[in-house]
Length: 555
Image: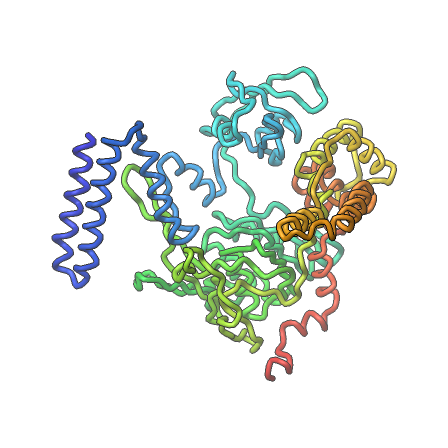
């Protein structure tokens, strides 16, 4: 079979080569045929003579991945085994129990059950440890392996052995899998009597329908202003970005154009429907991780002066991918075009075509970015993501906060708190009392809180350089003095950074009672982006000023 497959590849190469001589690009096609021949021969020789056994599929996958990686991060090979995961990414649907799981010190625990899912209805809660799935012990298995065991056809039975937080005995939970749809809009609600808020986390199928419904519901609840949260949204389906833009943009207006090597695939997408609301004051929140389709929506709203953007400059992914079928039910996701928003700009920030001498892809220099204009004449730029109208830097958490989060102490304490407190106020009003924070500090007293600060790392680097330069003795006493002061400050960090630690702990605790929606609501009063957005929306003159051309821009 192996010899036959090689013969088929070579025959294909020869056929391609013979055909190519009739084409204007004969030299290029000959190069393709020649290199395919070399590759097939090399593969055969390695398989025959390499000292150890070589798994053909694994070796081929390594070669394919390395080849595609040299192009851009978004051109990927999808083997048949991964097709289901890819389908989940694009549709937001899969067959399973409806719960996010994670690995905590070798234990598989429930991190978030989806509302109204089989997991939720069966009573699975955050912190529950999964011990067995249909009799298979899952301790020390990866989350990917466990996830595969949990997934399956809708209505198929699955039996779990779980142990709830704080319990010593396990219990058996029997449930049926169902078709799980991950919501693109995980939350919408009113921040006050006038301002509505909704979060869009993805662009899978029907994302535009979810956004339209959220806006309609908010308006029914009295919203006269809206905050549209696109932070950390990685993007997704292009047509959903077009349809979402159309909710706020007039019918007939251009939304986005795609341009690539295959000219017949080039297309301009326009708004086909009447907008739901083209006048309601709108603020869009963006972050450095808002990418692709999320950037299209943000950029379109900015280009038509339809919304004020608040937050950080977006990621800068102006590339479009399409899937192409391959043999044996595998697929290729390949970058086919760049997209251009109404002002004419492409926001792609990284140049994957013209790489640096070391092979790395470089950022497009600010000096090379080209100016474009919005519908009102405001100046905007290409080549670096979408810049916000109101910049708000992402808060940087302290080392102590990151440490207690990464080591799972927030997660575990929230479970402990839930066990000891049957209920709490609504998530948006929940505040952890000072005496409860003192209990949290006591709880941490027996935990490993060791961490290295940026100053300590810099001091270590300085000591190393000083020793190499023979000057360490001159500054040794100063370095030791600074280290003592830093050590003293670390001992007081739980007090010093109490406000930010309380913020993240409150959100974690709220999720135990109100799940994902509770986690989101608990952050509203501390979120700098939301606070800035509310200030803009509550000042009509300021809001309008961001959407007009200022004299400094040449008007």
